[in-house]
Image 1 (cartoon, rainbow, N blue to C red):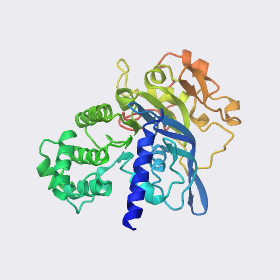
Image 2 (image 1 turned 90 degrees about the vertical axis):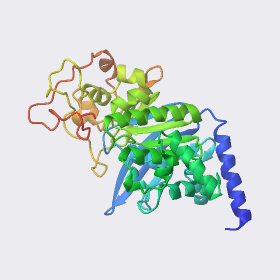
Image 3 (image 1 turned 90 degrees about the horizontal axis):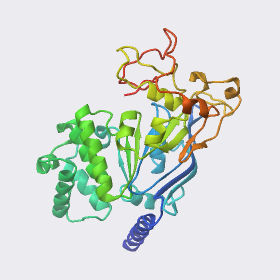
Image 4 (image 1 turned 180 degrees about the vertical axis):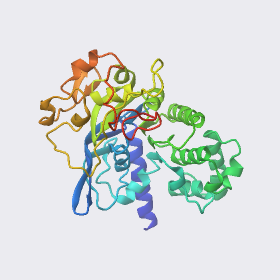
Length: 377
């Protein structure tokens, strides 16, 4: 690529990033669909997902493993395989990302939109020192080309994310660091270019409770400092309570409830959200009697009828009509929407009244550390 071409591309990407800050919603996702082809079968992982991110606010994408949360997050940055068929719209400000030239998308990734992966061990190169990986990002996005100044810049980033001996960490290989330290390095790389949007995909999954709290506090501080929009993907209701402003609950590739975190978690409008809340350990409930959602969520490769509610087989409120009608997201109260025709009974139901599954069923009692079959970690 010629120097003139590189300069034009850089100017264009910078202009896109600048214009994004002039919009009420920094990032807008509308009717996003993602499907993969596997053994000549079409697997729909994301089905018509829509949401918007605002600077200074955190949207939590909440749901069980396999619900399509991570695929949604990665689709924003077009990080999917060649077999993926993607539909809908993803706009950064007024710029459509789904059709943007790939060379420009490389400037958006890490520049306008940073991403903190679920497993930093898999995203950091084990054969390169931390300094080399930070310097590469700074050079790629024209933040700092001089190697010595880039190293100093990187040391400052590591200090900002709570690493008190940055020079040692810069000279270390990722495998020489603890899980918490690797996650902080990944966060430092993600915010190196002061992105407009930060996507954090299950950022606390592999961390102990103390480090989890520190990392969540760090996200809050960085968001306020950089005025970023934050999309946080998690299966943990507790994480949603701590850091979320808004929440979008996802099940079987679709959003089933959206709204402000405090409102949705206090008065859920969908049986799935209510089930997640009832599965939380609660003072007064004897050990071993956690309430869990019966059964298991459908996998993306399982055939599901488009005309029915995907949660109906696990829902204790299900009616015959639920198997012949898939409710759309509708407003159940100001700033809260749910995809359920039985919203009113749920709104009036006190917490903790979901009946436990029959003895021996898949959802009777599960450890509090798992959500893969209906518990909550």
